[in-house]
Amino acid sequence: MYAKLTIPERLKDLRVMQKHLTLEELAEQTGLSKSALGKYETDDYKDISPFAIVTLAEFYGVSTDYLLGLTETKNHPNTALSELRLSDTAIDVLKSGKLNNRLICEILCHENFRQLLIDSEIYVDRIVDMRINDANAMLEVARKKALEKAGGEDVYTRSLEVGQIDETEYFAHIIYDDLKAILKDVREAHKSDTTTADVDSTVANMQANVEAALHFEGSQEEKSAKLWLSSLNIDYNKLSKEEFVTLIKILEKSTILKNRASRRGKMFKKR
Image (cartoon, rainbow, N blue to C red; front, side, top):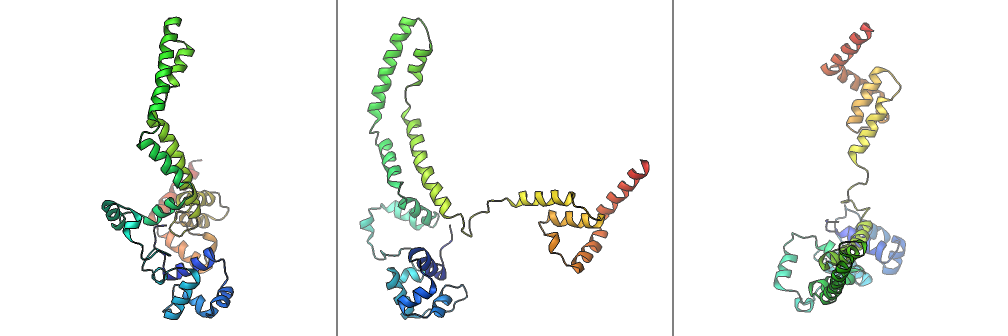
């Protein structure tokens, strides 16, 4: 999700994700030809006419700068910085290019972000600290009185102690839950992105292939070939006869395989 959308990706995203239209439907509603619209959404397109850019921008309700990849802002290209109420430092950070601004925007726009901000504000401004401290003080007074009567620690007095709240730990859990819910949704939304790592580990797949090769029923040459191919994550079944023969000839030149074969022969003779 770190990659900036290309012009074809922007056009397809607006058509499919925002308008839910087919190319035929888009052509009917815009008056542009289906073939031209299809070319605009492919990576090998050469040019888009100014008329098409303006027409599509008006249809999708976005700026022409957004369609041309000159800005990430769809609808507010000329918003004054003063309206955003950002500090100079915040603007410098966002402009630095060191952060994933797209991820920041998705977190900011999530329906639970306001809850995260409210909980953070309560903690930062110590809004409930006094209430927590008062409650802890009452529990501590009760604990000390109970200790005097009981003459020592017991289950009741211990519960009065562990029942006291550390505001930092308490809000750490609350804020963590808020942020976890947001990131989980953002993560799910991007699971099919090309920049998202595969769920299945390549190493795990290779291990499975090697395991299958070890139990492969065939000649010794076939087993050796399948084992080496599996270690390179190459599908043995996709080899042509000519490729297999070439591979066997290559493996026959291996001194490692020859040494192993000779050792197996000696072991067999001893038995």
